[in-house]
Length: 232
Image (cartoon, rainbow, N blue to C red; front, side, top):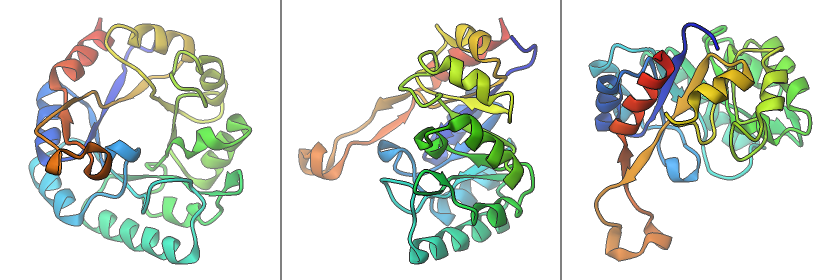
């Protein structure tokens, strides 16, 4: 296992971000709508977090839930959001797009806004050959890929993650917690971990979870335990 391991915390609010700092996270990813895998955060949310947090701050750029093949109109939104988030102080962006099952070449222009700092997110796991796709992401100027190796958990996808790590640094995710993080790092060869353990908070609107969703917040205790575990 690498001697220095970076823990990136997924945050969906200012409260999440402040809790992640207290828990010892090394870098934050800010997004909205984590229940659908994360969408672009509002500029207002980003500005508030940026003004209160000194850690490296990554911003998700994803205009809608679902697949990662975007129309011309959706791409215009992606470009606008990317420029605004970078202009507001994002240290890097977290994004991904595909044309059928290949990486969308338009991503290179956005990655160039923050050369060698952006993360290609889990769209990489939708590619039939994530190892080759990882090489392509590196050639586009991405700093790393966020992956569980195309499987539900990092441990299940460990062999693929290890192969991807030979092409580009990997930010490993997928069920990574304090109790298994050392095993995950050992079998994947990764030295960056992405985690956002959450707990339910409050009540859904009108009690209808299916229609209106439910609110959750970062589980700071679980995150702090993960940070301690990577130091052991």
